[in-house]
Length: 135
Image 1 (cartoon, one colour):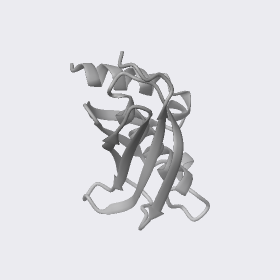
Image 2 (cartoon, one colour; image 1 turned 90 degrees about the vertical axis):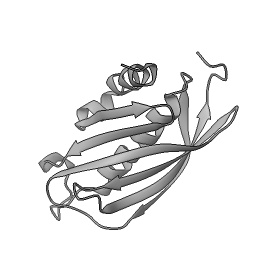
Image 3 (cartoon, one colour; image 1 turned 60 degrees about the horizontal axis):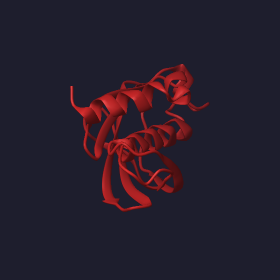
């Protein structure tokens, strides 16, 4: 198991909100993370489709964990999400990919797809590094 995967697993398991919402880590490498959500009644809105908040949470978790793969700690600073389509059932995945890593900030893109690879939502998150030295 890589150091990045160990770090990602530690971040994920320490995130009670993600665990409570059944968001699971599938893959982690330096600057890239994939998480999944098996759609269930608790992840749906009153229309019976995935709640936008569930997708936002997935994007925030995937991008945040991707930022953490360098061993430093981050908090979300800003974000933008674009919701394109939705699903009623199945599995959806969020990929967080670092696009810029600086001394104090990290910019990470998020893409949420369904089982067929269709893009459901996308976003960009900026994170502030609360400890600037690599661990």
